[in-house]
Length: 259
Ligand code: COA
Image (cartoon, rainbow, N blue to C red):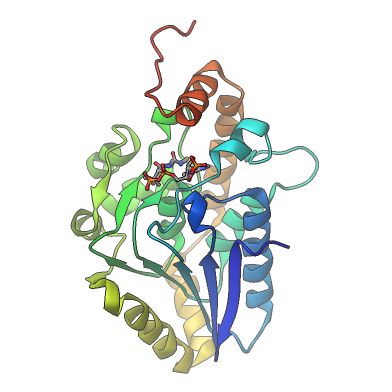
């Protein structure tokens, strides 16, 4: 149990909120676990028709908790048990009901890659999208190495995943993973209006439509696994150790002296 994820119901809409604003909504293993459980339960509950991700504070989420990564708690490819982060990623990749996101500020790492699995993404002007995996000595996750080139095109995906460039809301809309940019005041209302509209539609037709649009999820799950193997190895590397220490010490990493 963690109160860093808020789980609320508004009619047929399940709202999942990042609620750790003092750490910029960095996601811990416990938070991934809570999100995964809630999504799996929502899939089995006929009264829930749509899931809405939102956040408290000035950042949507700063991605995986880096201290968790450093301690091994945030491992993406675990031992016997499926790690909570993988349960979460599989749950969003296989969700049968529409997923909507309201992005009110910066989204980093998995905060961006999770959006590639959402059906509708609303952002306000303060939202930015940053996937600095290589800067951290890591590799993309959540099948973003497959989905971002598919959605945005290879060269735009390269700006984000290879160059690690932060993109603003307007550019993210051009890239194709943000539907609409709205004012901060209108964000929640807009996202809720979409969720409500979905909730009022025929549920079986809705599920079938999403299933048809998403197509075969097997390649996505396979890519997640493949990324997970490299991600886990990089977490144990000197490259990540240097990047993680640099983050903690609030300095730029120096990869020039690594063997
Ligand atoms: N993991 C753990 N702690 C994090 C975190 C993360 N991903 N992101 C932020 N924090 C913590 C900071 O360490 C700081 O803690 P402190 O108050 O104990 O020093 C606190 O949250 C505030 O962060 P700060 O960087 O001062 O806020 P900011 O408003 O200047 O910047 C971000 C916000 C999101 C742009 C910035 O925190 C950031 O880039 N975070 C790292 C993102 C990242 O690399 N994620 C991993 C992707 S795989």
